[in-house]
Amino acid sequence: MTDFVITPTFNERNNIRTLVERIFSLYPKIHLLVVDDNSPDGTADVVRSLQQKYPNLYLKERPSKLGLASAYLDSIKYILKEFPSVRTVITMDADLSHDPMVIGIMLKEIETYDLILGSRYVRGGGVKNWELWRRILSRGGNLYARIVTMSSVHDLTTGFHCYSANLLRRFDLDNIQATGFAFLIEMKITAEHIGAKIKEVPIIFPGRRDGQSKLSNRIIHEGLIVPWRFSPIFSIFKSKR
Image 1: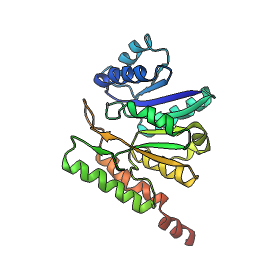
Image 2 (image 1 turned 90 degrees about the horizontal axis):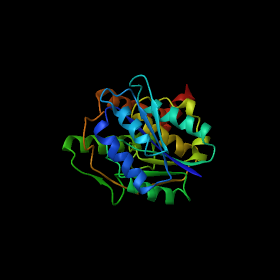
Image 3 (image 1 turned 180 degrees about the horizontal axis):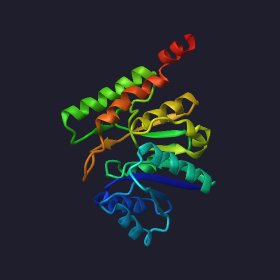
């Protein structure tokens, strides 16, 4: 059985080597796919050099910055098609904000669950080195999304997931509509709607070690709109039209 990690990159040259080496030092048999959106800083060049050392390291180069959702969705479809024995697909950030040690916990828990989330907002989890405004934005955004969707997930915006391949095969991946970080919300809500068994494990999120955050006004706006598509209130409204 194969376990696959996917990490999208854009200008992560100063982080990707450390991440790759940490992952393979802990999990020598794991497969890692780096999806690079034509980073001008040469991130892909670093990955190519590391492929000589790590045979299970894959690189998908895309022509431009096409967004988080398509990076993950295209990669998930590719893995499910080309690696029929895949057991799990793990998604994580490339900026060293997600601790690879947690992957081991996820792989153990996935034996009895369909989806494991690395959560900042369950007991034992948290964030470090964030300005007050960003703490408020993240906490408030999660609370907003939970209320609108009536979700039981505490950290709807975490990007650290471990999906069972069987669960992903139950998704209609072509029907996922969010294009940016709201994709993370949509995937979790969809999993809930199809009856997935979900567990959140605590993580401490320190933020990126190097480079610039990808947060933007467009991302925030999409995060406000997308949850309403999954709101029971909105569903009632549509049914009465």
